[in-house]
Image (tube, rainbow, N blue to C red; front, side, top):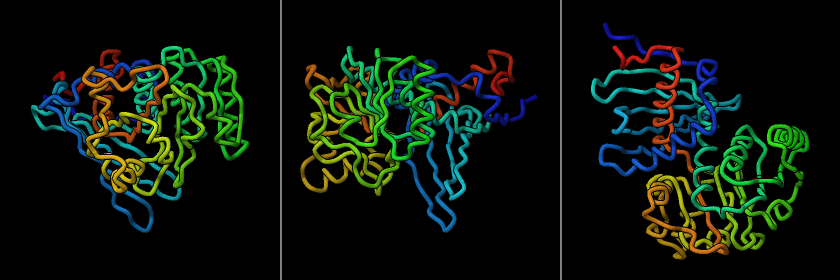
Length: 321
C-alpha cells in the first residue's frame, strides 16, 4: 500500500535544518544543475489587490523529484510551502512549510558563492540589512571564511541592535553598528546585501580592491541593491540562473539595456562550482554574486530534508513503500 503524502510543518523540519548541511546540499545541486535531466522554472508573479502570489519550481532528475514552491506575500506577512513529487510515479510525496528552509537555503547560496569567489583570507564582513534573512547570510559567510568583524548597517536602531547582539553571542565576533553604507563597506573583504531596497544601498566607489559582494535581497524588476559602478567593477558577475535574471536582476537588465553589458557576460553559479568558469583571477579583483533564489535550490534542499528526517525515524519517506 502506498504511503500517504506527508505534511511537514516548521517544527517537524527545524531539527534537520542547519547551514552546513544546506551548503553541502546546494554545492551538490549546482554541480548537477546543467544535467539534461534537471531544469529550473523561473519565478512568476500574480499581483492582486491583497498582495503577490509567487510560484517557482524545478526538476531534479538525479534525485528523481520535481517540485514547486509557492508563497503569498501580503500586508500581514508571507507563508511559504514546497510541494515535492516523485518523477517515476508523478505522485505527491510531501508538502513542507518552508519559511525556515527558505532563509537557510538563501544564506547557503551566498555562502557557496563566497566559498568559491571570495579571497581565502577575507575576515571583515559588511552586512547591509537586518531583516529575518540577515542572520543566515552572516552565518553562511562565517562558515566558509575566518570572519572576525562584522560591520552591520540597518536603518532602524532596535532590530539592528538585536541582530548585533545575536551575532556577537552566537559567533564571538566583533560587531560594529552603523547607519551609513560607506562605513559598512569601506575596507570590508566581503559585503552581503539582504534588503528590499528600490534604490542602491551599495556604491562601487566605496568598494576596496578584492571585495566579494553577495547581493541577495532584490529579486524583482523594481528593486536595486547596488549601483552601476559596482557592476562595472566586476569582470564576470555571477547569478544562480541567467534566465531568471532577465526578469528579476534589475541591475543586470539596466546594464544590458544601456549597452554596457550583454547577457553573455553573466556567469551561472553552477559553472563556477563545477570549475567551468573562474571569476577571480587575482586578489585585487572585485567579484559579485547576484542571488535571486531559484526553485532548483528549494527542490534539492526539500528532497534532502525529506531523506534526513526519514533516516532519523522522524517520519516515513513515501518512496520507501
